[in-house]
Length: 212
View 1 (cartoon, rainbow, N blue to C red):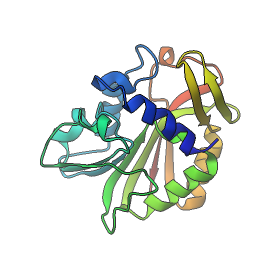
View 2: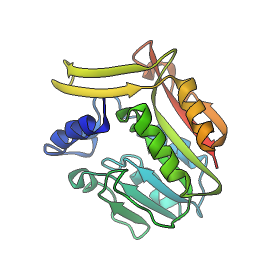
View 3: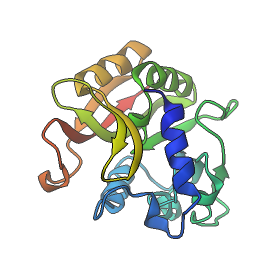
């Protein structure tokens, strides 16, 4: 499994985007208010955020007026048309690999519902690349489903999505270990949602909060 396969999936989805919630893959799966509330625990009016995988702005639109600046990185322009137009929000239509934030330093990097679309090697590359764009003492928050006891890889036709679907829900302890190897520290594993939000027994939603 590689991110290119997931990008192909979302490119097809982006061609039929007609509302902000069209990026949600399951019915009643919009937990963006909980996501926003969690991010704001680590933010204030002076916080500069790099948000990777902003989608249609379900989270960005809920927090932009409470922070100093957000750079929203999302490969598909048709998704970003739903992101709020504001002087403190910059939209960048690039993949994580292609985007180069130069010497910009951020207080907070957020990656919500995205990293399971990268395999382990790709994820380590991304975490390493953007480590350099965190201020000293800055934090990265990574939220998605993780494997409870082992890696869980989904690759092939999905009856629910009616198309090929690719994801790798890495074992939570492995993801934490990889972050530590890169140099992140003081890693918090937060059980971000109520139990009923977790549909499967072998994967679970967590938010990893790691400091530079």
